[in-house]
Length: 141
Image 1 (spheres, rainbow, N blue to C red):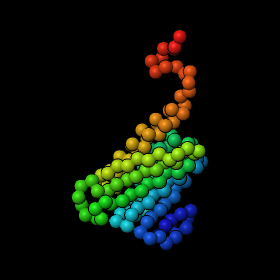
Image 2: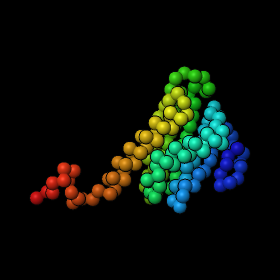
Image 3: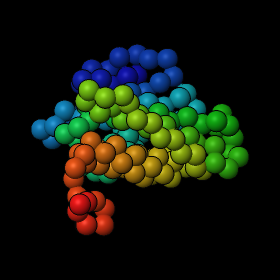
Protein backbone atom coordinates (compact mmCIF):
# COMPACT_ATOMS: atom_id res chain seq x y z
CA UNK A 1 0.00 0.00 0.00
CA UNK A 2 1.11 3.52 -0.69
CA UNK A 3 0.22 6.15 1.88
CA UNK A 4 0.16 9.47 0.09
CA UNK A 5 -1.62 12.59 1.31
CA UNK A 6 -3.65 10.62 3.83
CA UNK A 7 -4.90 7.99 1.37
CA UNK A 8 -3.87 4.34 1.08
CA UNK A 9 -3.33 3.32 -2.53
CA UNK A 10 -2.26 -0.20 -3.64
CA UNK A 11 1.28 -0.42 -5.01
CA UNK A 12 3.42 -3.19 -6.43
CA UNK A 13 6.10 -3.92 -3.82
CA UNK A 14 6.83 -0.29 -3.07
CA UNK A 15 5.97 1.82 -0.08
CA UNK A 16 5.78 5.60 -0.20
CA UNK A 17 5.06 7.85 2.76
CA UNK A 18 4.86 11.63 2.51
CA UNK A 19 5.69 13.80 5.51
CA UNK A 20 5.06 17.54 5.49
CA UNK A 21 7.39 19.38 7.82
CA UNK A 22 6.33 22.51 9.71
CA UNK A 23 5.45 25.57 7.63
CA UNK A 24 8.05 24.75 4.99
CA UNK A 25 7.15 22.86 1.87
CA UNK A 26 9.79 20.12 2.18
CA UNK A 27 8.34 16.62 1.84
CA UNK A 28 10.10 13.47 3.01
CA UNK A 29 9.13 10.43 0.93
CA UNK A 30 10.26 6.92 1.90
CA UNK A 31 10.36 4.22 -0.81
CA UNK A 32 11.38 0.59 -0.26
CA UNK A 33 11.83 -2.36 -2.54
CA UNK A 34 9.89 -5.57 -1.93
CA UNK A 35 12.71 -7.05 0.19
CA UNK A 36 12.50 -4.40 2.92
CA UNK A 37 9.52 -4.29 5.24
CA UNK A 38 9.08 -1.30 7.53
CA UNK A 39 6.47 -0.67 10.20
CA UNK A 40 4.70 2.68 10.40
CA UNK A 41 6.82 3.48 13.48
CA UNK A 42 10.01 2.66 11.55
CA UNK A 43 8.95 4.89 8.67
CA UNK A 44 8.17 7.76 11.06
CA UNK A 45 11.55 7.31 12.75
CA UNK A 46 13.33 7.43 9.37
CA UNK A 47 11.33 10.52 8.37
CA UNK A 48 12.34 12.15 11.64
CA UNK A 49 16.02 11.38 11.11
CA UNK A 50 15.96 12.89 7.61
CA UNK A 51 13.79 15.84 8.60
CA UNK A 52 15.94 16.71 11.62
CA UNK A 53 19.25 16.40 9.76
CA UNK A 54 18.08 18.50 6.80
CA UNK A 55 15.96 20.94 8.81
CA UNK A 56 18.20 23.94 8.15
CA UNK A 57 17.80 23.40 4.39
CA UNK A 58 14.00 23.02 4.39
CA UNK A 59 13.42 26.50 2.99
CA UNK A 60 15.52 25.51 -0.06
CA UNK A 61 14.18 21.96 -0.54
CA UNK A 62 10.84 20.93 -1.98
CA UNK A 63 11.25 17.19 -1.54
CA UNK A 64 13.63 14.57 -0.16
CA UNK A 65 13.19 10.99 -1.33
CA UNK A 66 14.64 8.05 0.57
CA UNK A 67 15.04 4.95 -1.62
CA UNK A 68 15.85 1.78 0.33
CA UNK A 69 16.81 -1.48 -1.33
CA UNK A 70 18.25 -4.83 -0.28
CA UNK A 71 20.84 -5.87 -2.85
CA UNK A 72 21.03 -9.44 -1.59
CA UNK A 73 17.27 -10.08 -1.67
CA UNK A 74 16.98 -10.75 2.05
CA UNK A 75 20.17 -12.79 2.52
CA UNK A 76 22.60 -11.37 5.06
CA UNK A 77 25.82 -10.68 3.15
CA UNK A 78 27.26 -7.64 4.90
CA UNK A 79 26.64 -4.16 3.56
CA UNK A 80 23.67 -5.17 1.44
CA UNK A 81 21.17 -2.43 2.39
CA UNK A 82 21.43 0.60 0.12
CA UNK A 83 19.97 4.01 0.89
CA UNK A 84 19.83 6.46 -1.97
CA UNK A 85 18.78 10.00 -1.02
CA UNK A 86 17.48 12.46 -3.56
CA UNK A 87 17.12 16.06 -2.40
CA UNK A 88 15.29 18.44 -4.70
CA UNK A 89 16.28 22.09 -4.19
CA UNK A 90 13.69 24.55 -5.45
CA UNK A 91 14.55 25.69 -8.98
CA UNK A 92 17.75 23.58 -9.17
CA UNK A 93 18.81 20.11 -10.24
CA UNK A 94 18.43 17.33 -7.65
CA UNK A 95 21.33 16.24 -5.48
CA UNK A 96 21.98 12.53 -4.80
CA UNK A 97 23.88 10.54 -2.18
CA UNK A 98 24.13 6.81 -1.57
CA UNK A 99 25.31 4.68 1.33
CA UNK A 100 25.53 0.92 1.77
CA UNK A 101 25.34 -0.64 5.23
CA UNK A 102 24.25 -3.78 7.04
CA UNK A 103 21.08 -2.16 8.44
CA UNK A 104 18.45 0.30 7.24
CA UNK A 105 19.25 2.74 10.06
CA UNK A 106 22.98 2.73 9.31
CA UNK A 107 22.42 3.16 5.55
CA UNK A 108 20.02 6.08 6.07
CA UNK A 109 22.34 7.69 8.61
CA UNK A 110 25.32 7.44 6.24
CA UNK A 111 23.41 8.80 3.24
CA UNK A 112 21.98 11.68 5.30
CA UNK A 113 25.43 12.61 6.60
CA UNK A 114 26.71 12.74 3.01
CA UNK A 115 23.69 14.79 1.91
CA UNK A 116 24.29 17.38 4.64
CA UNK A 117 27.82 17.82 3.28
CA UNK A 118 26.58 18.09 -0.32
CA UNK A 119 23.89 20.65 0.59
CA UNK A 120 26.30 22.65 2.76
CA UNK A 121 28.61 22.91 -0.22
CA UNK A 122 25.81 23.66 -2.70
CA UNK A 123 24.13 26.39 -0.68
CA UNK A 124 27.41 27.89 0.55
CA UNK A 125 28.41 28.40 -3.09
CA UNK A 126 25.10 30.11 -3.77
CA UNK A 127 25.55 32.40 -0.77
CA UNK A 128 29.14 33.29 -1.63
CA UNK A 129 29.26 36.11 -4.14
CA UNK A 130 32.16 37.44 -6.16
CA UNK A 131 33.84 40.21 -4.26
CA UNK A 132 33.08 38.77 -0.82
CA UNK A 133 35.86 38.62 1.74
CA UNK A 134 38.46 35.91 1.26
CA UNK A 135 38.63 32.77 3.36
CA UNK A 136 41.55 34.16 5.34
CA UNK A 137 39.65 37.32 6.18
CA UNK A 138 42.22 39.47 4.33
CA UNK A 139 40.62 41.74 1.78
CA UNK A 140 42.23 41.83 -1.69
CA UNK A 141 43.98 45.08 -2.65
